[in-house]
Image (cartoon, rainbow, N blue to C red):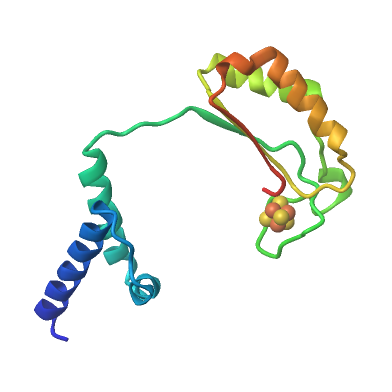
Length: 152
Ligand code: SF4
């Protein structure tokens, strides 16, 4: 396909995917699979056009804090720069340290906390229960979301 033809073809594809989304029409299986092969900028144009038509230029945000409660992780993923490579670098935050971080976030206007840490086999369910209970008792009215993720 020549340059102009390709651009026209892509524009047609973009508008068809956008139309189907806006009209709530299901994609055929081959259309779904085709999304995986699309150049990223074309995929981005589809997403951006749907966003623009549905939300206009309205932008919203939340103030959020990620609290990394431990860097001990048994997964040891090759790409990871987060987990502790030796005992001297390993940490687990105490309930008091976590509450202090939550308090600081609240003071700065946060309405969302993500507790994110490594897969630490030494942390029992009681560790999390105690922290969640303490946070709930002190800060519940501030939150839209308080979530836990077991791997950073
Ligand atoms: S913290 Fe996450 S990315 Fe890092 S080693 Fe553990 S599971 Fe893998």
